[in-house]
Image (cartoon, rainbow, N blue to C red; front, side):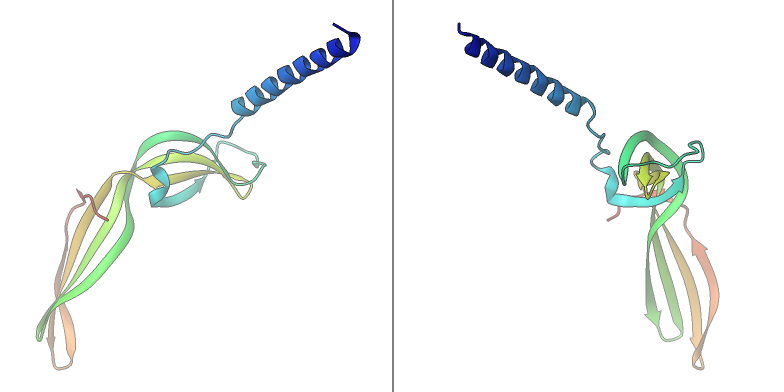
Length: 152
C-alpha cells in the first residue's frame, strides 16, 4: 500500500471513530421527554423550593416525579338552569382531578413543578329558587361529594 493510500485509510478510520463517538455522545445526552399522555390536562405550576438556583437553556422538561395525590382540583365548571315559572334550579357540574403526574420543568429560568391531571372526578351542585313578583329567592342548595367519573 502506498503512503498516500495509508494516509487516506487512516483518515477515514479516524473519521469513522469520531463520528461514532459523536453519535453516542449525542444519544447519551439527549433531553428526556415527558410522558406522552400527561400534557392533556395541565392543572398548575409551583416553584421547586429545594433548588436555590436558576435553570439555563430555555423551557424544557427535566424529569418525572410520579403520580401524586392532590386535594380535589376543579378543572372546569358547567352551569345550567332548569325549570321555569315560580320554581327554578341552577345546576353546577364540576369536573376535576384528585391525583396528578408531577413533573420538574425549567420554565422562564426557574425550576417549576408542573402538575397534569390523572384521576378524573366529578361533583354536582344544585341551587333551588322560588320566583315571584319579578324576583327570585334561594330556598336551598346542595353539593354532592366528589366521585370518580370519566368525563370529557
